[in-house]
Length: 423
Image (cartoon, rainbow, N blue to C red; front, side, top):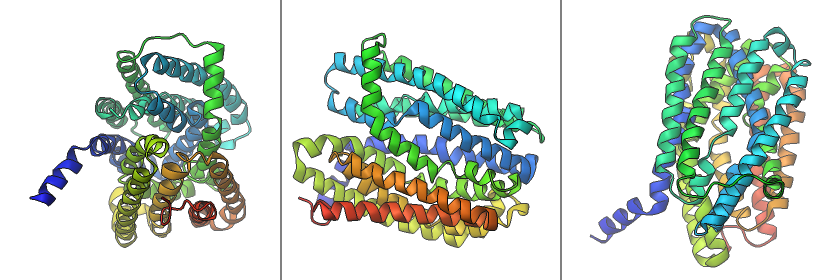
Protein backbone atom coordinates (compact mmCIF):
# COMPACT_ATOMS: atom_id res chain seq x y z
CA UNK A 1 0.00 0.00 0.00
CA UNK A 2 2.84 2.39 0.80
CA UNK A 3 4.42 1.91 -2.63
CA UNK A 4 1.01 2.29 -4.29
CA UNK A 5 0.38 5.52 -2.42
CA UNK A 6 3.87 6.77 -3.25
CA UNK A 7 3.38 5.99 -6.94
CA UNK A 8 0.06 7.84 -6.93
CA UNK A 9 1.74 10.87 -5.33
CA UNK A 10 4.44 10.90 -8.01
CA UNK A 11 1.95 10.64 -10.86
CA UNK A 12 -0.18 13.49 -9.54
CA UNK A 13 2.78 15.70 -8.57
CA UNK A 14 2.95 18.98 -10.54
CA UNK A 15 6.37 17.99 -11.89
CA UNK A 16 4.93 14.79 -13.32
CA UNK A 17 1.94 16.63 -14.78
CA UNK A 18 4.21 19.14 -16.48
CA UNK A 19 6.49 16.39 -17.78
CA UNK A 20 3.52 14.56 -19.30
CA UNK A 21 2.36 17.79 -20.94
CA UNK A 22 5.84 18.48 -22.30
CA UNK A 23 5.89 15.04 -23.85
CA UNK A 24 3.19 16.32 -26.18
CA UNK A 25 5.57 19.05 -27.31
CA UNK A 26 8.35 16.53 -27.81
CA UNK A 27 5.99 14.54 -30.00
CA UNK A 28 5.51 17.67 -32.09
CA UNK A 29 9.22 18.53 -32.18
CA UNK A 30 10.75 15.12 -32.71
CA UNK A 31 8.20 12.41 -33.43
CA UNK A 32 5.97 14.30 -35.88
CA UNK A 33 8.95 15.03 -38.15
CA UNK A 34 9.54 11.30 -38.32
CA UNK A 35 6.07 11.03 -39.86
CA UNK A 36 6.96 13.47 -42.63
CA UNK A 37 10.62 12.48 -43.06
CA UNK A 38 9.87 9.14 -44.80
CA UNK A 39 7.63 11.00 -47.24
CA UNK A 40 10.08 13.82 -47.91
CA UNK A 41 13.10 11.56 -48.30
CA UNK A 42 11.25 9.56 -50.93
CA UNK A 43 9.52 12.30 -52.95
CA UNK A 44 12.44 14.74 -52.86
CA UNK A 45 15.36 12.29 -52.98
CA UNK A 46 18.60 12.61 -51.04
CA UNK A 47 19.48 15.95 -52.65
CA UNK A 48 16.06 17.54 -52.07
CA UNK A 49 15.90 16.22 -48.52
CA UNK A 50 19.38 17.63 -47.96
CA UNK A 51 18.12 21.07 -49.05
CA UNK A 52 15.24 20.86 -46.58
CA UNK A 53 17.63 19.88 -43.79
CA UNK A 54 19.99 22.71 -44.76
CA UNK A 55 17.11 25.20 -44.60
CA UNK A 56 15.92 23.86 -41.24
CA UNK A 57 19.41 24.15 -39.83
CA UNK A 58 19.78 27.71 -41.13
CA UNK A 59 16.40 28.54 -39.56
CA UNK A 60 17.72 27.36 -36.21
CA UNK A 61 20.49 29.95 -36.47
CA UNK A 62 18.05 32.70 -37.38
CA UNK A 63 15.56 31.65 -34.73
CA UNK A 64 18.11 31.55 -31.96
CA UNK A 65 18.70 35.29 -32.34
CA UNK A 66 15.03 36.18 -31.87
CA UNK A 67 14.53 33.49 -29.21
CA UNK A 68 17.62 34.91 -27.45
CA UNK A 69 17.68 32.27 -24.74
CA UNK A 70 14.33 33.43 -23.34
CA UNK A 71 13.25 29.77 -23.10
CA UNK A 72 15.58 29.65 -20.07
CA UNK A 73 16.06 33.21 -18.83
CA UNK A 74 12.39 34.24 -19.12
CA UNK A 75 11.24 30.92 -17.68
CA UNK A 76 13.49 31.55 -14.69
CA UNK A 77 12.09 35.07 -14.21
CA UNK A 78 8.48 33.94 -14.52
CA UNK A 79 9.15 31.17 -11.97
CA UNK A 80 10.50 33.74 -9.50
CA UNK A 81 7.55 36.13 -9.84
CA UNK A 82 4.76 33.69 -10.56
CA UNK A 83 2.58 35.17 -7.78
CA UNK A 84 2.96 38.78 -8.98
CA UNK A 85 0.59 39.41 -11.90
CA UNK A 86 1.82 42.95 -12.56
CA UNK A 87 5.44 41.84 -12.69
CA UNK A 88 4.54 38.99 -15.02
CA UNK A 89 2.85 41.45 -17.36
CA UNK A 90 6.04 43.53 -17.48
CA UNK A 91 8.15 40.44 -18.17
CA UNK A 92 5.91 39.32 -21.04
CA UNK A 93 5.87 42.79 -22.61
CA UNK A 94 9.63 43.15 -22.36
CA UNK A 95 10.31 39.73 -23.86
CA UNK A 96 7.91 40.23 -26.77
CA UNK A 97 9.33 43.67 -27.52
CA UNK A 98 12.87 42.33 -27.43
CA UNK A 99 11.95 39.47 -29.77
CA UNK A 100 10.48 41.90 -32.30
CA UNK A 101 13.64 44.02 -32.32
CA UNK A 102 15.91 41.01 -32.56
CA UNK A 103 13.93 39.42 -35.34
CA UNK A 104 14.01 42.57 -37.49
CA UNK A 105 17.78 42.81 -37.08
CA UNK A 106 18.21 39.09 -37.69
CA UNK A 107 16.21 39.13 -40.91
CA UNK A 108 18.34 41.91 -42.35
CA UNK A 109 21.57 40.16 -41.37
CA UNK A 110 20.36 36.79 -42.69
CA UNK A 111 19.29 38.33 -46.01
CA UNK A 112 22.77 39.77 -46.50
CA UNK A 113 24.46 36.51 -45.49
CA UNK A 114 22.27 34.50 -47.87
CA UNK A 115 23.94 36.12 -50.88
CA UNK A 116 27.23 34.53 -49.83
CA UNK A 117 25.78 31.01 -49.49
CA UNK A 118 25.73 29.07 -52.80
CA UNK A 119 22.73 26.90 -51.90
CA UNK A 120 20.55 29.96 -51.21
CA UNK A 121 21.78 31.79 -54.30
CA UNK A 122 20.66 28.82 -56.37
CA UNK A 123 17.41 28.34 -54.38
CA UNK A 124 16.14 31.79 -53.23
CA UNK A 125 12.72 30.46 -52.18
CA UNK A 126 14.48 28.07 -49.82
CA UNK A 127 15.85 31.08 -47.93
CA UNK A 128 12.41 32.64 -47.46
CA UNK A 129 10.94 29.33 -46.36
CA UNK A 130 13.71 29.03 -43.79
CA UNK A 131 13.07 32.62 -42.64
CA UNK A 132 9.38 31.88 -42.04
CA UNK A 133 10.28 28.72 -40.17
CA UNK A 134 12.64 30.70 -37.95
CA UNK A 135 9.85 33.16 -37.09
CA UNK A 136 7.51 30.33 -36.15
CA UNK A 137 10.11 28.70 -33.93
CA UNK A 138 11.10 31.89 -32.13
CA UNK A 139 7.49 32.97 -31.50
CA UNK A 140 6.75 30.15 -29.06
CA UNK A 141 5.25 31.23 -25.71
CA UNK A 142 5.92 27.96 -23.91
CA UNK A 143 8.49 29.70 -21.67
CA UNK A 144 5.71 31.54 -19.86
CA UNK A 145 3.70 28.41 -19.08
CA UNK A 146 6.82 26.55 -17.98
CA UNK A 147 7.55 29.35 -15.53
CA UNK A 148 4.11 29.18 -13.90
CA UNK A 149 4.25 25.34 -14.12
CA UNK A 150 0.93 25.09 -16.00
CA UNK A 151 1.89 23.62 -19.33
CA UNK A 152 -0.98 21.35 -20.34
CA UNK A 153 -3.06 23.73 -22.47
CA UNK A 154 -0.08 25.42 -24.13
CA UNK A 155 1.44 22.04 -24.95
CA UNK A 156 -1.78 20.89 -26.58
CA UNK A 157 -1.93 24.06 -28.68
CA UNK A 158 1.68 23.68 -29.86
CA UNK A 159 1.14 20.05 -30.80
CA UNK A 160 -2.01 20.89 -32.73
CA UNK A 161 -0.30 23.64 -34.72
CA UNK A 162 2.64 21.44 -35.65
CA UNK A 163 0.39 18.49 -36.45
CA UNK A 164 -1.56 20.66 -38.89
CA UNK A 165 1.71 21.75 -40.49
CA UNK A 166 2.89 18.14 -40.78
CA UNK A 167 -0.37 17.18 -42.46
CA UNK A 168 -0.11 20.09 -44.90
CA UNK A 169 3.27 18.84 -46.10
CA UNK A 170 1.64 15.77 -47.64
CA UNK A 171 -0.61 18.00 -49.75
CA UNK A 172 1.78 20.82 -50.64
CA UNK A 173 5.08 18.99 -51.26
CA UNK A 174 4.97 16.41 -54.03
CA UNK A 175 8.17 16.68 -56.10
CA UNK A 176 11.70 18.16 -56.12
CA UNK A 177 11.73 21.95 -56.34
CA UNK A 178 9.12 22.36 -53.58
CA UNK A 179 11.54 22.05 -50.68
CA UNK A 180 10.75 25.62 -49.56
CA UNK A 181 7.12 24.67 -48.97
CA UNK A 182 8.11 22.08 -46.38
CA UNK A 183 9.84 24.85 -44.43
CA UNK A 184 7.15 27.49 -44.88
CA UNK A 185 4.21 25.39 -43.66
CA UNK A 186 6.11 24.44 -40.52
CA UNK A 187 6.71 28.12 -39.85
CA UNK A 188 3.02 28.93 -40.31
CA UNK A 189 2.07 26.15 -37.90
CA UNK A 190 4.39 27.62 -35.28
CA UNK A 191 2.94 31.10 -35.74
CA UNK A 192 -0.60 29.79 -35.36
CA UNK A 193 0.29 28.05 -32.10
CA UNK A 194 2.10 31.12 -30.79
CA UNK A 195 -0.90 33.36 -31.50
CA UNK A 196 -3.25 31.11 -29.51
CA UNK A 197 -0.75 30.78 -26.63
CA UNK A 198 -0.34 34.57 -26.54
CA UNK A 199 -4.09 34.89 -26.12
CA UNK A 200 -3.98 32.37 -23.27
CA UNK A 201 -1.11 34.31 -21.69
CA UNK A 202 -3.03 37.58 -21.66
CA UNK A 203 -5.93 35.89 -19.97
CA UNK A 204 -3.60 35.49 -16.98
CA UNK A 205 -1.57 38.71 -16.97
CA UNK A 206 -2.38 42.35 -17.78
CA UNK A 207 -1.55 43.63 -21.25
CA UNK A 208 1.42 45.98 -21.22
CA UNK A 209 2.98 47.90 -24.09
CA UNK A 210 6.74 47.23 -24.37
CA UNK A 211 8.87 50.19 -23.35
CA UNK A 212 12.51 50.89 -24.07
CA UNK A 213 13.26 50.09 -20.45
CA UNK A 214 11.43 46.75 -20.46
CA UNK A 215 12.97 45.73 -23.78
CA UNK A 216 16.46 46.63 -22.61
CA UNK A 217 15.88 44.83 -19.33
CA UNK A 218 14.84 41.68 -21.19
CA UNK A 219 17.91 41.85 -23.39
CA UNK A 220 20.16 42.19 -20.35
CA UNK A 221 18.32 39.37 -18.58
CA UNK A 222 18.68 37.01 -21.53
CA UNK A 223 22.22 37.86 -22.61
CA UNK A 224 24.02 35.00 -20.89
CA UNK A 225 21.36 32.51 -21.98
CA UNK A 226 21.63 33.84 -25.53
CA UNK A 227 25.33 33.05 -25.48
CA UNK A 228 24.46 29.59 -24.25
CA UNK A 229 21.71 28.91 -26.79
CA UNK A 230 23.71 30.35 -29.66
CA UNK A 231 26.78 28.33 -28.76
CA UNK A 232 24.73 25.16 -28.33
CA UNK A 233 23.36 25.68 -31.84
CA UNK A 234 26.93 25.61 -33.13
CA UNK A 235 27.21 21.94 -32.19
CA UNK A 236 23.59 20.72 -32.23
CA UNK A 237 20.86 21.97 -34.59
CA UNK A 238 23.25 23.96 -36.78
CA UNK A 239 25.34 21.01 -37.92
CA UNK A 240 23.47 20.30 -41.14
CA UNK A 241 24.05 23.92 -42.14
CA UNK A 242 27.76 23.70 -41.31
CA UNK A 243 28.09 20.45 -43.25
CA UNK A 244 26.29 21.97 -46.23
CA UNK A 245 29.00 24.61 -46.54
CA UNK A 246 31.55 21.88 -47.36
CA UNK A 247 29.77 19.01 -49.12
CA UNK A 248 26.96 18.34 -51.61
CA UNK A 249 23.32 18.39 -50.37
CA UNK A 250 22.94 14.59 -50.59
CA UNK A 251 25.57 14.12 -47.86
CA UNK A 252 23.71 16.66 -45.77
CA UNK A 253 20.66 14.47 -46.30
CA UNK A 254 22.42 11.38 -44.94
CA UNK A 255 23.60 13.24 -41.85
CA UNK A 256 20.32 15.08 -41.24
CA UNK A 257 18.27 11.89 -41.55
CA UNK A 258 20.34 10.17 -38.87
CA UNK A 259 20.23 13.30 -36.72
CA UNK A 260 16.42 13.44 -36.91
CA UNK A 261 16.15 9.85 -35.71
CA UNK A 262 18.59 10.30 -32.83
CA UNK A 263 16.85 13.49 -31.71
CA UNK A 264 13.50 11.72 -31.66
CA UNK A 265 14.88 9.37 -29.01
CA UNK A 266 16.61 12.17 -27.14
CA UNK A 267 13.33 14.08 -27.13
CA UNK A 268 11.84 11.41 -24.89
CA UNK A 269 14.07 12.69 -22.07
CA UNK A 270 13.69 16.45 -22.61
CA UNK A 271 10.39 16.81 -20.72
CA UNK A 272 12.05 15.44 -17.58
CA UNK A 273 14.80 18.05 -17.81
CA UNK A 274 12.43 20.91 -18.63
CA UNK A 275 10.06 20.01 -15.80
CA UNK A 276 12.81 19.96 -13.17
CA UNK A 277 14.35 23.30 -14.22
CA UNK A 278 11.75 25.77 -12.83
CA UNK A 279 11.34 23.77 -9.62
CA UNK A 280 15.10 23.62 -9.01
CA UNK A 281 15.38 27.35 -9.85
CA UNK A 282 12.93 27.99 -7.03
CA UNK A 283 14.25 25.48 -4.47
CA UNK A 284 17.93 26.39 -4.81
CA UNK A 285 17.12 29.81 -3.30
CA UNK A 286 14.71 28.62 -0.63
CA UNK A 287 15.50 24.99 0.30
CA UNK A 288 18.97 23.89 -0.85
CA UNK A 289 18.77 20.41 0.71
CA UNK A 290 15.53 19.66 -1.11
CA UNK A 291 17.06 20.96 -4.34
CA UNK A 292 20.01 18.56 -4.00
CA UNK A 293 17.73 15.58 -3.40
CA UNK A 294 15.57 16.50 -6.38
CA UNK A 295 18.64 16.90 -8.58
CA UNK A 296 19.83 13.40 -7.68
CA UNK A 297 16.43 12.00 -8.62
CA UNK A 298 16.70 13.75 -11.99
CA UNK A 299 20.24 12.44 -12.49
CA UNK A 300 19.10 8.87 -11.87
CA UNK A 301 16.11 9.13 -14.20
CA UNK A 302 18.02 10.83 -16.99
CA UNK A 303 21.04 8.55 -16.63
CA UNK A 304 19.25 5.22 -16.78
CA UNK A 305 16.77 6.35 -19.39
CA UNK A 306 19.44 7.75 -21.70
CA UNK A 307 21.63 4.64 -21.56
CA UNK A 308 18.72 2.39 -22.49
CA UNK A 309 17.70 4.68 -25.34
CA UNK A 310 21.26 4.91 -26.68
CA UNK A 311 21.58 1.12 -26.73
CA UNK A 312 18.26 0.82 -28.54
CA UNK A 313 19.32 3.33 -31.22
CA UNK A 314 22.69 1.63 -31.78
CA UNK A 315 21.24 -1.86 -32.15
CA UNK A 316 18.25 -0.89 -34.27
CA UNK A 317 20.09 1.62 -36.50
CA UNK A 318 19.83 -0.40 -39.77
CA UNK A 319 16.12 -1.02 -39.30
CA UNK A 320 15.38 2.58 -38.27
CA UNK A 321 17.17 3.99 -41.32
CA UNK A 322 15.52 1.54 -43.71
CA UNK A 323 12.01 2.17 -42.39
CA UNK A 324 12.20 5.93 -41.81
CA UNK A 325 14.54 7.18 -44.52
CA UNK A 326 14.26 4.48 -47.17
CA UNK A 327 16.41 2.04 -49.08
CA UNK A 328 18.68 4.68 -50.59
CA UNK A 329 20.03 5.96 -47.26
CA UNK A 330 22.27 3.09 -46.10
CA UNK A 331 25.11 5.58 -45.60
CA UNK A 332 23.13 7.08 -42.72
CA UNK A 333 23.41 3.89 -40.61
CA UNK A 334 26.98 4.40 -39.30
CA UNK A 335 26.16 8.08 -38.73
CA UNK A 336 23.19 7.12 -36.56
CA UNK A 337 25.29 4.71 -34.52
CA UNK A 338 27.82 7.42 -33.79
CA UNK A 339 25.07 9.91 -32.90
CA UNK A 340 23.53 7.41 -30.47
CA UNK A 341 26.36 8.39 -28.12
CA UNK A 342 24.81 11.84 -27.87
CA UNK A 343 21.80 10.57 -25.93
CA UNK A 344 23.57 9.87 -22.58
CA UNK A 345 26.04 12.74 -23.08
CA UNK A 346 23.32 15.34 -23.61
CA UNK A 347 21.23 13.91 -20.78
CA UNK A 348 24.17 14.29 -18.41
CA UNK A 349 25.01 17.82 -19.53
CA UNK A 350 21.35 18.86 -19.16
CA UNK A 351 21.29 17.71 -15.55
CA UNK A 352 24.66 19.22 -14.63
CA UNK A 353 24.28 22.42 -16.61
CA UNK A 354 20.68 23.51 -17.10
CA UNK A 355 19.25 21.94 -13.96
CA UNK A 356 22.10 22.75 -11.57
CA UNK A 357 24.68 25.26 -12.80
CA UNK A 358 22.08 27.78 -13.99
CA UNK A 359 19.91 27.73 -10.83
CA UNK A 360 23.16 28.13 -8.82
CA UNK A 361 23.95 31.24 -10.84
CA UNK A 362 27.06 29.76 -12.49
CA UNK A 363 26.18 31.41 -15.79
CA UNK A 364 29.72 32.52 -16.61
CA UNK A 365 31.31 29.09 -16.17
CA UNK A 366 28.38 27.51 -17.97
CA UNK A 367 28.70 29.80 -20.98
CA UNK A 368 32.47 29.42 -21.11
CA UNK A 369 32.05 25.66 -21.50
CA UNK A 370 29.29 25.96 -24.10
CA UNK A 371 31.06 28.58 -26.20
CA UNK A 372 34.27 26.55 -26.13
CA UNK A 373 32.35 23.47 -27.25
CA UNK A 374 30.75 25.37 -30.12
CA UNK A 375 34.12 26.61 -31.32
CA UNK A 376 35.57 23.11 -30.92
CA UNK A 377 32.76 21.68 -33.03
CA UNK A 378 33.30 24.20 -35.83
CA UNK A 379 37.04 23.63 -35.76
CA UNK A 380 36.62 19.87 -35.99
CA UNK A 381 33.99 20.24 -38.71
CA UNK A 382 36.30 22.36 -40.85
CA UNK A 383 38.95 19.65 -40.59
CA UNK A 384 36.79 16.51 -40.74
CA UNK A 385 33.74 17.37 -42.89
CA UNK A 386 35.57 18.08 -46.19
CA UNK A 387 37.41 14.75 -45.91
CA UNK A 388 34.92 12.45 -44.19
CA UNK A 389 31.61 14.22 -45.01
CA UNK A 390 28.71 13.10 -42.79
CA UNK A 391 30.86 10.80 -40.62
CA UNK A 392 33.32 13.59 -39.92
CA UNK A 393 30.46 15.85 -38.85
CA UNK A 394 29.04 13.15 -36.57
CA UNK A 395 32.33 12.62 -34.74
CA UNK A 396 32.84 16.37 -34.40
CA UNK A 397 29.45 16.68 -32.69
CA UNK A 398 30.04 13.78 -30.30
CA UNK A 399 33.47 15.10 -29.34
CA UNK A 400 32.02 18.55 -28.60
CA UNK A 401 29.24 17.09 -26.43
CA UNK A 402 31.73 14.95 -24.51
CA UNK A 403 33.72 18.12 -23.83
CA UNK A 404 30.55 19.81 -22.49
CA UNK A 405 29.62 17.02 -20.07
CA UNK A 406 33.19 16.64 -18.76
CA UNK A 407 33.68 20.39 -18.45
CA UNK A 408 30.48 20.86 -16.45
CA UNK A 409 31.29 18.10 -13.99
CA UNK A 410 34.83 19.36 -13.45
CA UNK A 411 33.53 22.90 -12.90
CA UNK A 412 31.05 21.71 -10.28
CA UNK A 413 33.64 19.44 -8.64
CA UNK A 414 36.14 22.29 -8.28
CA UNK A 415 33.46 24.39 -6.53
CA UNK A 416 32.44 21.38 -4.38
CA UNK A 417 28.83 21.52 -5.58
CA UNK A 418 28.78 18.49 -7.86
CA UNK A 419 25.65 16.26 -7.40
CA UNK A 420 27.57 13.50 -5.61
CA UNK A 421 28.61 15.66 -2.67
CA UNK A 422 26.48 18.84 -2.88
CA UNK A 423 24.39 19.52 0.16
